[in-house]
Image 1 (cartoon, helix red, strand yellow):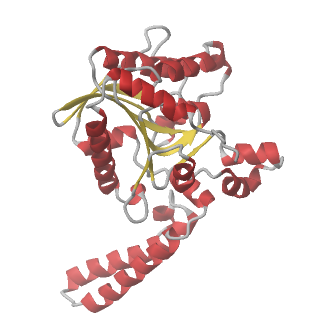
Image 2 (cartoon, rainbow, N blue to C red):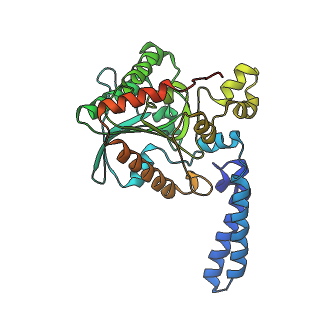
Length: 323
């Protein structure tokens, strides 16, 4: 595999990518020469499958964090496109402006009408600057709340996609009330009388994730992370050394199985072999099926019952019982 082709892939993925490149080159060569290489292809494909299981079967928490941040991983708008949903994006918080780091609007998934809100990162430098790397400003969270209130007014379910390193920490964001905007969302999302399904599709970073992360069901993709601080930030504070992020990640328990065990999330959505960044269509199908199943289960509950269960769910987190 050329050096250019390797750009954007993680170090531990490269042996597998090199092998897959060899398979593709052999297949292309055989097609052009009318040569039967089926036996060699079968051998290489079996080797690739074994290597894939070996790599992804023993990932460390730090490696999963790297996958969660993978530059080729699908983002909110990618999932909506893969769903085949009709999405009408709405803009602005009606106070300050629009925030491209957090998108939202009306969505039609088959016969179901919902409101979608989600963080959105960019694919290249220009788009990442425009999207602020998925780090929302206060106007982003106020836009999200405006849309969620709209959903409640019309009795529509809400689906949120979480994927952010955290809320934007700049002076301007603080001046415009970043903390108040996130706190307001937490307060009001807990009491919206419509079904809310939250899906963590990449990074669930601190209050930036919580700002759209309160729901009746919290789902998490297999190779996503969710934490109150990044492993680098934790290492900087505890060890005075950000290079010890791998050690911090192991101690923080930030991956899906950890959070399911702690009762923070309700379900882990399986990703295709090698992660969502290697099969976006397969990942989108798994996410869509999970969302539809949970919405179907929730839509039969009254608004009062939804709110009661949601409050009980989040109030129980972190509860410790002594014998």
